[in-house]
Length: 320
Image (tube, rainbow, N blue to C red; front, top):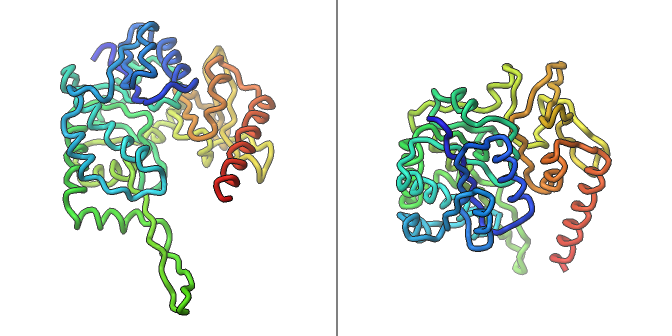
């Protein structure tokens, strides 16, 4: 498929959304770039981005059904976690409306550094691409969807999981966060705190993929070809790292830019070109530098420290 559509789904208008969209255009000047967004980010149409409102009725098929079925089993905020799942229904509906069989989905905290059409051919034998969060969750921030049938199947699986108390209980046991904690009660008897879970689109995508019977691949499988679609910039197990303030700032992948493209090094000394960088969480503060093809490590460290201090202060104020 020539000029495969590239889709970003995001509500709101943070600085990093603009960086993500402009980076896509820079490396893919002839591709369709679609933003599934809201009124706050509609202005990107002036930059050649096609905009669809996530709440438009044409994209709402089964979204309302999912919302009625949804049970919140996550420590993340209700609205955020629910939207993370329902966005796949919205994307499926857009693919139906536009009659696409394939597209690339990117999270808004990803910077792309490649010709997407060329990379699509690399993954043409797979229904979808994932990265590893852990052994029970799939990262889906850079998802080459090469089969609309696969996305249809995932959405059906989600509805079935929330309709069936038995299936939802199975998922809750699989994604229980630690053991239930106990509190001492006034009568001296132990009382268990409610169990905590993490059922998200990442965990649902993993559970679905185990039974879907479709061909999938993990982006990390291509490191031996000298390329990397970054799982998360602070996932460093195979990579040489920057670790400038141990115990304060977590290590992250050592990045060097050559002609505007990021490179890293595996621990065995093998050079790897990054086709994308995923700036998850507070690492979004790196995006303005990386979008310019720069990695000034001390300026980035100062920004990371500022974000860390701000976030810590907010958490302390919430506890008061």
